[in-house]
Image 1 (cartoon, rainbow over the protein chains, first blue to last red):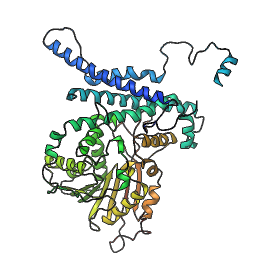
Image 2 (cartoon, rainbow over the protein chains, first blue to last red; image 1 turned 45 degrees about the horizontal axis):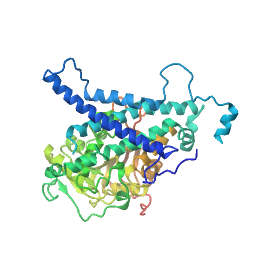
Image 3 (tube, each protein chain N blue to C red; image 1 turned 180 degrees about the vertical axis):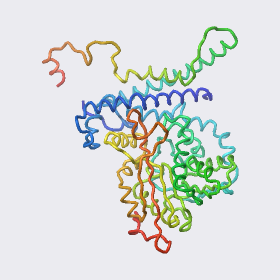
Length: 104
Length: 370
């Protein structure tokens, strides 16, 4: 794939061949931030409910531990680590000649 | 309107992501490079590293996150710029007390800021560190997570540097160039209470915060002035120590030369000039990452300054006893750490020689004026 220009239409730096990936990464991280902020608000609510005796058995890790665990799980797919033993890489049932043709 | 708690949660998430980037993504990227590099990476150039790394998917993610986690730290719903904009009135109440001219602070509204300084929003800080009254507060808050793994011990970096300086003797007249909001200056005026310390910077909002912090500490031996590090306006031979922390890489090479020349002029014969900056890049991969960081973090002079032959330049400017050595920012952090992303901290130290008469030797040639 031909490398896209180094800056997007709005002037921002680009890092992927398809600028759509740059944009979608931004959407995912914006959503993840909002999710974490809501998660923190829910925690506040649960802490207050636990203190007033309305819920029982709740455990709250430190905010830092919580953020680190959330982030590690969110971003781990970027490392491309296979979680179970099997064939790796990209999968295709095309014949070799078809694969060559579709690359042209 | 976001709440204080939501702002803190948003920033906590971003910092966690930066920590993951530093300690999980970076070592895997380095490992992937080293697995592909062959037998002799030491012979590689930055272009050789780029040819291998730039097309790796892992590197694309690394680069994207480096750029955009910093963007999100400053801009957007939970960004520092918006946060301090919303609390502007209360945040500035104490900071802007007085007219900017007292025993600790001297501002100069007529100072013409250099084009190299205003032409780019350094660190991705919208408006830079100088254009908004709250810019000093935004910068100070942002700097707390500049080196994410140092966390709460980030202040130790400056204290450690001051101790490095103290090991060579206690200065009595200190000039801190490009002092910003005073984080680098504070350990000097605290560690050397008998010394007279001056801090200069181009940014009025940063200097207001530096002076505010000094006033609150009760320090009587510090004065902050809005001046250019390349043209300080002090008399010849006014100081026995000229220092800076993270200044040089934020100026173009021509300005670095002028700063050295100016430091030499204001130093007494035998006085020391000691900078803490980024320069020691022991392998091509580290250099490649440093240059990439420069571009992604809006620091256009970082690469050209890293490419300068500082030893040669300092000798040419008439300095002696030149030492350029890696600096450990924490007990367990130094250039041997290949498993985390870190800045290439370096101490650049030199001395203005004494002539036979006790006066400085003349410079080898007149400093360039570009």
